[in-house]
Length: 237
Image (cartoon, rainbow, N blue to C red; front, side, top):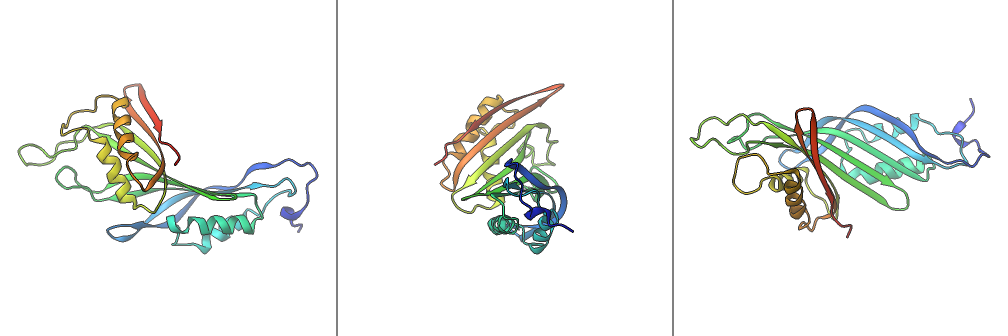
């Protein structure tokens, strides 16, 4: 069988992305309180294919993924990307994983675990780049009932999608707590004023964090038949 990857191609056309996607894969992520949390991720792996090659060995993506079985986390992202780039002789390597992350919230206003959708997107060309994205629900009621009884039903107002690049390591729990702090405007348990005000308030919180190098915020309010949104980006330091 011919080695298609290493056959030369005279057409001089670069393929921007080639790889494998939507792989369901067990991963272990760092958990501040429990050390580790096991979950199931959807994984996309791909490379920028130089024009001199006709193709790539798709099985090598899975082989590399299997070598890091149980050790796919923020700290190992660069190692995985470097191995993909070198093994496939690629100009750039990319890794995307999306997974649910579970936290036990404050029992005074919530029952059971809260689920957050997390995404990590890493790229390695000359230098590496890692973006973490977290979706945090915005609820109508975030406080305990005034008489100290059972928590009231927490209606869904919308969602906050926050992407960040780090100057230094930050726990997922701490980033979620930071986002939720930015979503609470004052002590009122009523609905937020507007997508613009929530977006600006959250942006002001994130801009003060020395551990965050860049951020993007999208606030979406879900209404009947349509939704409204506001977005902003913080500066790249």
